[in-house]
Length: 379
Image (cartoon, rainbow, N blue to C red):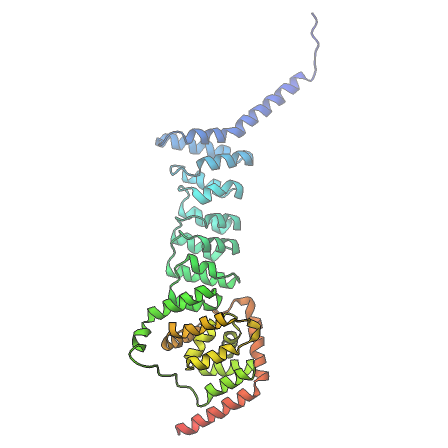
């Protein structure tokens, strides 16, 4: 029997053998990971051998195999730190289980990932509940919008008061809604007042009640009737007249003068569609419930307030005290506008303030006259 000779046979066989050996080599990291997770504990010599083998094989393995190995090893506390760090710095699809779950990923390696890898890596880290203070601080500094949003929603993460304050500022600077953050973090009554304009109607009222209770002013007020805040003569009447005449810019300027805040803040109070800031301002200005009700009824028709909305707003007069209202206005004024307005709205507010200057000639003349009268009375 004759045997045919294939001149290419020798060249084909080594290539096939090479492909088989390469596939075997690529799958070795998955086999190593599978063997590593079998025993509950490892001897030191076994850990050393595993670390050496995995370090030499991991970088050259295909991405799917690296992802499988990382998923298998993500929850092992005895995984060598160098292996955890190597996997955490890989592509995000490979690194994610290590970043979100691995107890072996050390603090310094977490910080290095934050500084050197992608926003997706930082966002994955932000889902953890066991982040150290230094790691949280690094995320707050280097994290982008997605990372900040994830931190905001991480209800089981413990932050220091300073970190909460920094997180709130990041949320505001990026123009994101503050409502979810208010629900998930214990901001405290005073901090909620600073963020008052960004809260929902329900959160605003809860904040007012909590702040009122914290300041304990109600106990003082129950001993006698309230003493209205002392303002310049005739200011309250002029304010009411401006509202009745529909002169909103004049109204905002007079209200700003009555409570001692900037015109831009006064304009925002008047234009707030919820109405709660206006109630606080009217209380601080010394108006009684009757005058306040008249003002609320005649406020901007575009708000579309119903009878029930106005009723609930007037009810706040009984819920919070005038001393509390004055304290709240002082906090708003001291905030300097940064925490009261999202950056994207500040331009519109400055334009509105210019409109007040241009269109409020009667208010300016009246205020100048009132100041002159005050100066002459003090001499």
